[in-house]
Amino acid sequence: MIDEKKLEDRLVALEAVKAWSPRVVSRLEMLLRAGTDEALYRINPIQFAAEKSIAEAEAIDLFLHACVVGLFDMDWQLVCPMCSDVVESFRTLRKLHTHFHCHLCQTDYDAALDDFITVTFTVSPAVRSIRFHQPDALSAWDYVFHYKLTPGGILPDGVPWREAAKGLVRVLTRIAPGATASLEIDAVEGALLGQDFDSDAQFFFPVASGAGVTEPHVPVALDKGKCVAAQVDIGPGKVVFDIRNAGELPVVFGILQLPSATAQRPGLRFGPSLSGKRVLMTQTFRDVFRSEVISATEGIAVLDVTLVFTDLKGSTALYERIGDLNAYIQVQRHFQHLLDVTIRHNGAVTKTIGDAVMAAFLTSADAVQAALEMREAVDQLNRDRPQRDFILKIGVHRGASIAVTLNERLDYFGQTVNIAARVQNLADGDEICITEDVHRAPDVADIIAPYPVTTSQAELKGVSKAVSVYRLARLAS
Image 1 (tube, rainbow, N blue to C red):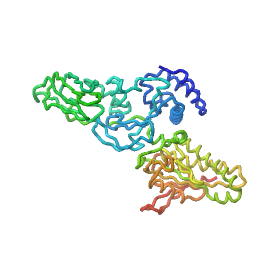
Image 2 (image 1 turned 180 degrees about the vertical axis):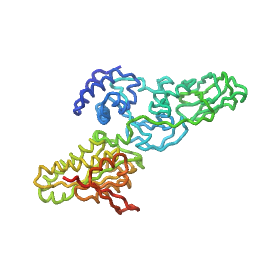
Image 3 (image 1 turned 45 degrees about the horizontal axis):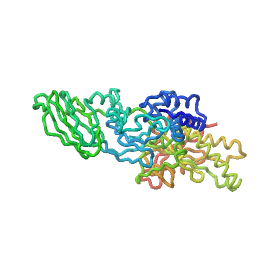
Image 4 (image 1 turned 90 degrees about the horizontal axis):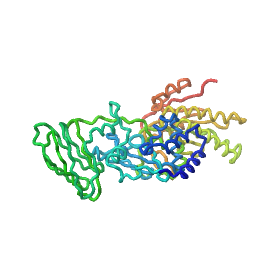
């Protein structure tokens, strides 16, 4: 089942990509060789990192580079927040859309990169074949509980919803086109839910003592995503549903015994996973998947992103004093220092504009810590020079944005971007300006506590209300 030559060649290529921490690649090789089919399907890098004692950032880099060398395929998934069903999955970002409908919950959703969009990794069939590479050949049980439902959704009592749902299923089968399956259920008080797991075709029968005579056979027809069932009363006892698939495609159909006809399903929480937002804010993704674009005309929402804008004060004078070529080389050194700091703090450089940098971060705490280190990194550059050629101005703002593709580059668009850029313009040399939205974010107040801070109200172009700005000066020497 394993192509040894391809596996070995691709592992060698992966090892050569960068200096990995000790045994990182060997742990991945062990998974590829000894992992079950389930373990090699839709791998969650955050969970892998926790289980293998690897830093999350390195685990994400590991799987991204492993995709590049052909060990894994990457999936962008739309996940229903009510039942953890993988409603749709896409091999590339360009095919991802944000409006989706869950057949199981019969509910429509709008996804954001923070919510409902996750990224997982499945072993490449060229390296090792697993049964999930052929979903149409899976058993009905595997199809529903491993291919459709993710293990990430967790009930309030801590039980994964996928495991709880297994206890509700009374029968689950595939039905070929034109075929009829007679499914016998020992019904108890509550309700019976019949479900085609790939369409909106459902039936629902309350089951109550004294509600009527138990029908021995209940005819049900499935066709074109619709379910037509006989109108009958069902009481506790044996009942047979004759399910006829009148459509042109096979269906996976199941019947669940629910404890009540009126009970509301409790909400789910989700364990840590790799969100679409985090992938876009990973520098490795931006570097090695440059061809990935967002095709959705309206872009994809990001509910919470912290943006850092930097610029060099007096760079024009630098170009005049040392010449274009020398100045360009020095400015590139400054860019590299800022990039290194950004990566260390879970961010990604979105673009450079002249001497300016725009970077995006998962949290405001990461962004502010990065801003402080950027200022120090530029100081290091100046220490080797006869005068302070590099004086950095930094602005930080947090809010919602839209991820788009502009000029063949993944970028962010909207008022949050505008405010971040204009706050940077307020900063003086060696100064970091952060907005109120950043200041009240978790951990930020503790990070900036040692620094001299002054507060002011600023009128920004295009912003109707004054913005509270906190100016972080240097520590007294």
